[in-house]
Picture 1 (cartoon, one colour):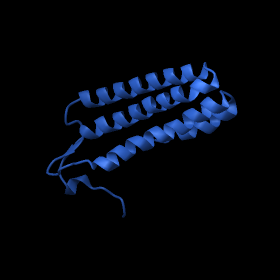
Picture 2 (cartoon, rainbow, N blue to C red):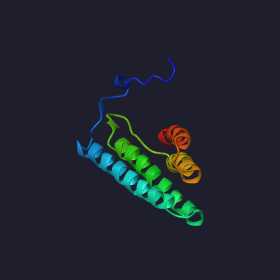
Picture 3 (cartoon, helix red, strand yellow):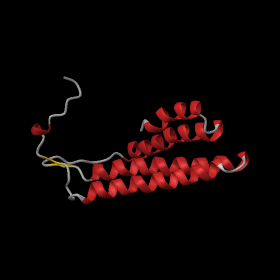
Length: 130
């Protein structure tokens, strides 16, 4: 079976290496990113078109960074006994940029096309995908 990970052959899996604080901090960071990003998006939608793009980009950056930070904090809290876990810096940075870009597509669809039902239906699958 390709892609199956059997933890027993590598060591004991410890989901909460740092206790319950890791998932709590991850959740709070996601909430903070979402709150800041949605606030920027609301501000962008209340502006004229020339100033809208900057606020939309800032909103996408905040939400994408919040999503990425939540996952990264959760990964830091994960450990497997007898296995060294490391992170490749270019891949890690690329994953942050992908999260921001995918959220940005959804945010810009809403910001450019408006708040109609068609626009919301088109942007939702894109914004939720990371």
